[in-house]
Image (cartoon, rainbow, N blue to C red; front, side, top):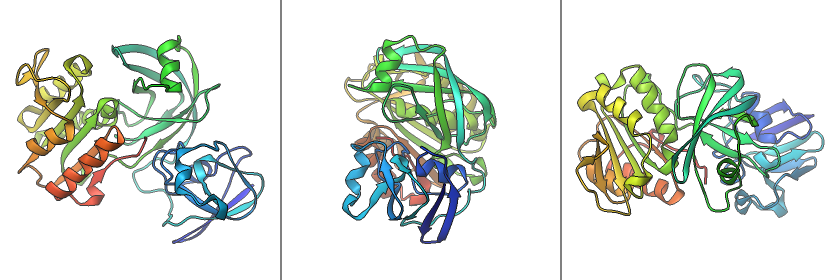
Amino acid sequence: MKITVQTNSGAHAFDCEPGENLLYAGLRHGLTLPHDCATGTCGTCRGRVVEGDVRLLWDEAPGLKFCKQEKGDVIMCQAVASDDCVLRVPSNTVGVLEGFTVPSYRRGTIGNVRMLTHDVIDFDMTLDAPLRFAAGQFVVFEIPGLIGRRAYSMVNYSEETETLSFVVKRKPDGGFSDWLFDSNVSGAAIKVFGPLGRATFHPEEDKNVVCIGGGSGIAGMMSIVARASRERYFDDHKGYVFFGVRSLADCFYLERFSEAVLQGGSNLEVTVALSDEPIPHATHPDAPALKLAEGVVHEVASRSMAGHYDNMVGYVAGPEPMVDAARRVLAREGQIASADIRYDKFS
């Protein structure tokens, strides 16, 4: 069937498979349709049906609170057309941006599952075809038997790879995290769509880097540090990473961060912020290359970054209140331009 979107930059038409949501259909045709989470929570992919019949896959999607459904508003990631249709999308839409891969569907198989803490797990996923992605991007999972989709950032980085790595924190009543923690998921098959996301690192921008991540929100920043380290970016650029957790027992990826700091020398600093317990030392007892600080992560970043914002790009990920607070720190105190404060809304 044919879908037409009327945007501020003109009309664009693309084909859509039966049962495919409108957002993914447009994205895999290379259109920059507006989106953040791509899973129904944020409402960024809002559009208004002008012609045709469209049904929602998830009637209780949180993102619908931003829609005027009585006027035909839908969120495209949860909208499926029964036939040809026309939508009005209030944004500028162009073809795929230079340096980004057009999203597509793949199949993935879970393996190498590891418990990092009592409520954090990581695993690898082997894809049925190689994927090229930018450091900081994410993919969306669809699991048989679970309603909805889940978005997770890649932890690793490679120019093109068949293996992706992910880290997941258990959430109360989280269907996907409960499935991961309570089942033997090794060998399980998952439908994957991506890559997605614009909180990405590009060495050619030639900027210093600050990353503020809370809990498993550190995932995309691990990918950024991995690429920067591989290219020895910190030989002549500054990097500051702030990793927020509740206590020392909640820390993970200490070895990976330590290796990056040792390679980056004085140009890369990693600080673990403990929000719920006092710090025992100035550095982590099990990873002395990493600094410790007491407080919530955006406040720690605020104190530590004063006077260090020259030629800076910032990355933020984690719980929504933390993301909003960190963005304010970077904008108000760091005077970083909005285009250089990069984040994706997953909550």
